Each structure stands twice: as C-alpha cells, then as structure tokens.
Amino acid sequence: MNNTAVSENKQLLIPKNFIKVLILSIVLLGICVLASLAFGSRAVGWNELMDGLFHPDVQSHGANVVRQRIARTVFSLMCGAALGVSGALMQAVTRNPIADPSILGVNTGAALFVVCGISFFNIGTAGQYIWLALAGAIITAIFVFGIGSMGSGGATPLKLVLAGAATSAALSSLVMAIMIPRSNVMDQFRFWQVGSVGAGNWNSISVFIPFLIVGILIALFSAPALNAIALGDEAATGLGVRTGTLRLVAAFGGVLLCGAATALAGPIGFIGLLATHMIRLVIGPDLRYIIPMSALSGAIILTISDVCGRILGSPGELEVGVVTAFIGAPILILITMKAKMRTL
Image 1 (cartoon, rainbow, N blue to C red):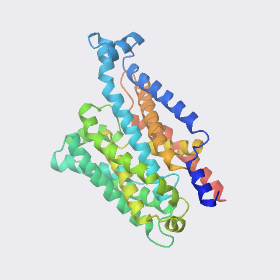
Image 2: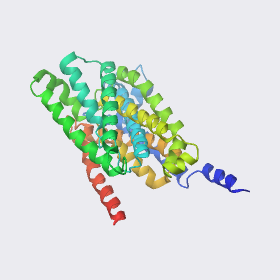
Image 3: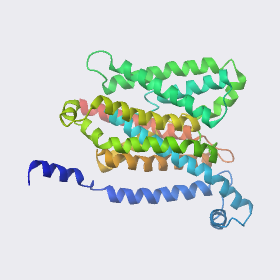
Image 4: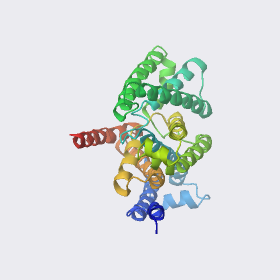
C-alpha cells in the first residue's frame, strides 16, 4: 500500500471517542428538551407533559403550558446549533481557538444595524430584523478581518481578537448613543439586547430555517478543505485548496448563521466558543466531525442555559444571554491562560 492510500485510509478513520460522544450528546439533548418543556415559571408533571405532547384533546392548564413551550424549545435548539457551527467556522477560518461571534464583534455589528432599523425605519418583524442583522454582521466581519490583517504577519489570532474587541467596544458606544435619547426604542431594544429565546415562536422559526440550512450546508461542504487550511496556507495551496475563496465562503457561512440567530434571539455570547472548544478537546481537530457535533453541543448548552435561567429567575426568568455570559467568561479566561502558558 502506497503512502497516498495510507493517508486516505487515515482520513476515513472515525475519531476514537466520536460514537460515545455522539450517543451521549443525543441523550443529553433529549434530557434538555424534556427539561425545557417541563420547567419554567410553572413546573409541570410527567402526566401533563405527556398530555401536552401526545394528547391534543386534553385541554388542562399544564398540557397547554407544555404546548406553548414547544416553539421556544425548538427555537432554542436551532439558535444553539447555529451559534455552535458559527463558532467552529470562525475558529477554523481564523485559526484561532478562542474565536467566537461575540469576541470578534460580529454580534455587536448586527445589534447596531437592528437598533438603527428600530430607531429610523420603525422595523418590528422577524424578517426585517434578520436582513438588517445579517448586513451588520457581514460588514463588521469584513472590517474586523481587514483591521486584523494590517501590518506584518497578516491576520494573526491575537490581532483578530484585539480588532474584534476594539470594534465591539466602539459599536456598543454607537448603539447606546442612538438608543438613549429614544425611550421608545430603548423599551423595544433592551430585552433583545440581553439575548433571549423567550420570544421564539413558529413565525420566527419559519424565518430562521432557510438560513440555518444554508449555513450548515456551507459548513459541512467546507469542512474537508478547512482541515487542509489547519496545516497552513502553503500546505493547503499545495493540496489544491484555494485558501482565499475557501475562507470567504466559510466566513460567509459563519456570519450567516450568527447573524440570523442574533437577529431573532439577540446577541447571545460564548455558545460558539464553549461548544466547539469542548468538542475539539474530546474528539480531536477533524472539522468533518467537529461541525455536526458543535451543532449538537451548541443546542444542548443554549437549551440548558435557558432552563437554568427560568429556574433561577422564577417566578420570572433570567435571560439566557446573562447565563451564558456568566458561564462563558471564566471559561474564556481559563482557555486564554492555558494558551498563554503553552507559548512560554
């Protein structure tokens, strides 16, 4: 057997822990779905849960509560999957293990365009939000990458993070400058700004589905070539990969997923970072497996965070963006410290 054949066989090998992690993720996902349907400002029992799911003729209060939570749960799963895959794509494109839509300023760019739409054009529907948020996310991503590419060395991971942090701070100031003088805008925008899946309904889900499908397909088809980029641009070019085109397409997929989720749920941070980083630690660096598993883990993290927010904030609720920030910020610090220690 020649070296090429050996290399191809190695590429076809499934990561050692993949099947175990996949089964565990599916089980956890099922538990999260049941918890999301059962817990909230009013917890429901098992019989009410079953009635709400499988007995449409039963019209008890508990069964109706479960039915109202189905759309929220589906919406949470979709947003988590989108943010997880977006994080995987952004980390692959930038070759930066701490890249995330919120860290690179993409969420803030989407937020700026949404608040401008609310302030100056009186937008208020999911379809209008999503196009404005996508425009803001794309323009911000191009700007951050352009700033991060200036100077010697090109777009290094550190320069991209610094450019994203600076851009995010500047855009956040613009958001506040536009919003503060307009009390009506502040009331409409402040709940969206925190990040929540509580407003998820079947209309927003139907608007979200095409963007989710296109973004995930881009990610899956880009995965083999992104594996080559991980070896370095010269090696990838030698393997026939058009690195510039690939980065553009993959980045577009990541921004599409992030922008759509941000438009409908608000700027929820750290999901892409947490989901992708945990999966990479367990199954290795192969993006053909990281991308689908990041979708599963992102859905799990966001849904369980939403459930925790409802339980902790009862009888009201704690917005999921607050919960993910509370969990994600210390983990980001630990990842950064670990990466810095490796370079010493």
